[in-house]
Length: 334
View (cartoon, rainbow, N blue to C red):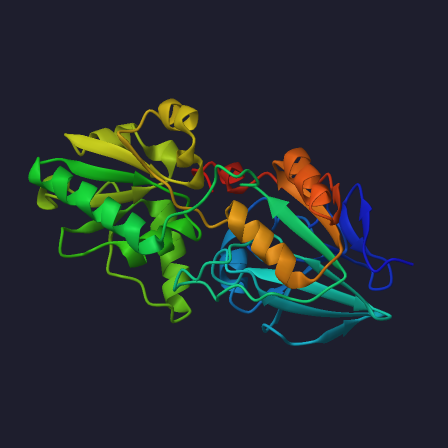
C-alpha cells in the first residue's frame, strides 16, 4: 500500500487515516500553512506547526488544533510524520510521511530563497515529492529581494516628493509582512489596511519583529500622514476608503507582475515582481535536492512543467487538486 493516495477529498494517508491540506471536510487534517486554499474550515481536527497555529486560529475560529515543531517526528497510526520549513510564509511547512521505508513529501507552497521572515526552506530527501508549479514557466525568474526593495522604496520616495500617497497591493498573510521588512521607514509613515494589520498583530504576538505601522481605519485622517505608503489588499485599491487619501499612485507586489498582460489588467501605476513562491529555477532546484524520482505536480502550469520534468528524466505526473493559489483570498497574487 502506498503511503499517500489521491482522493476526491484530498491527499490521503491510509495507514494514518489523515489528509494533507484537504479541500473537503475530513476527520483529521494535516495543514501545510494558513492560506485559505490550504487551511479550510470544517475539519474534525487539525495539525500544523506551532508558528502557523495563531494565524489559523485567527482565520478559522475555535478549531481543534494541535501543533508540532519543525523536525519533530510524530507517529500517527502506521505513519511517521514530520513538518519541515517551506519558506513560503511564517510557519509554512512541507509534510514528510514515512511508511515502511517509503518517504513522501507534500510541499504545499514554497520558495527556496530566504526572505529573512519565514523559516528558510529545508530540502527533504524522499522517494516521492508533491510540488506546486504556480510559476512553472522559464519566464518566471526572480530578482534579489534587495533589488526589489530598492525599486519599491525609490517609487515610494518619488510619490512622497510629488505629494502623493503610495498604495501597495499585497495579500495579508506573508507578502504584507515580508514587504514591511523591506520598506525604508525614513521615507515616511507606513499605514496598513485593517485586514493586514490584524495579521500583523498575530505575527507580532509571536515575537516576530516587524516595523511600526499605523492602522488606516475610518478614524484616520490622511492629511496627518503626508508621504505615507499604504499596504492594502488589492480589492481595497480604488475603493471609497482609498479615494479619501486624495492624490495617489497604486502598485502591486506579485510574481504575476512578470507578465505584461497581467500588469495591464491590474491597471496599477507600477508592478513589482516579488513572490512567496519558487520561480522556475527554484522549483527545479528544490526537486533536484529531494533526490526523488517520482514527482507529482499540483496547481499552476502543471502540464507544461510536468512535460519538462519528464523530458529531463524524472517520472512526473499531474496531480489534480483544488488548491487555488493565494489569490483565492481576494488578495493579490502570489
